[in-house]
Image: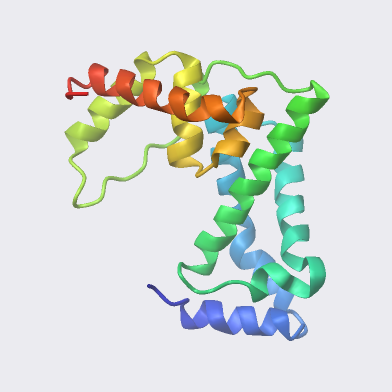
Length: 193
């Protein structure tokens, strides 16, 4: 388990004590990370980023952070960096935002072609760049619905309920849909089922 950096801990403590200037320092340090997380989620789910959606998600995240006397910051357990924790909150809020927009009828899922324009993650030492290339190629060959369910579950960390709501599936249909999508991508990559 990693612990927060001394800078994170100091800023966290200052915010919780409501020290003068602490919130401004918090925004200066983390607002860009929140915007990147919101943008990445929008690109993965709908394939495009509208500025009003991006702004709404970041503002909702900041409101969630300060809600109930900074309850979200008080519940930070230090199992990740503070930035990672805040990005996870942002992703969840982005998914909720998209679900709400879909219910209103303002959002329609589109093919995820523009998601390919997003910067590729940098391979870690344990990841083979050829495997990542093969995975990307296989993902591009999947039908948009299969691509979406895999991205929601594996990249955005969405739970079955969120996936069911976003994709208009019953809760019981999520698991079989994930299994089928995984089988398709394994077949495309030439792996045994």
